[in-house]
Image (cartoon, rainbow, N blue to C red; front, side):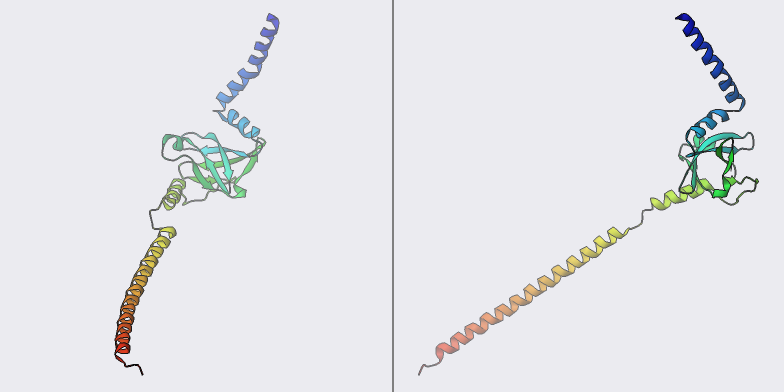
Length: 190
């Protein structure tokens, strides 16, 4: 039985030591490549171009936007993920998976021919979207509540005036009725 254990340990060493060595040599790309390969096309291998050293992260495309967590996002705690608009021609195929290049300093997608789209700041765009969602302006529901409140107040005033005017008319009818009764009492019956 000990021989079986030794054999399992040796096989594990033969398989995993080269994997960890190549993952270390490729600066973590091999592990991320395996995760993207295992996702079966739902994730992208994103090469982040940094002035000092390029590195790889895993990105996900949802509704035409690339969601990615790079080192700048991990350092700033405020933003959860960067969201970048991508076209279908920005994605290329390499190592059997879908890949994409992304410039971290310019916050822009690098096309396969190394041309870029300039004048786009992903963090600023994301902050503008968040600000527009949480803008404290008066919404339609509050306006409708204000219109309903004004309408109810006007209705109460009209009903009050109607009751008051009906009360005056009722008083005049009672006075006229008393005068008619007095006049009819004074008229001789023939």
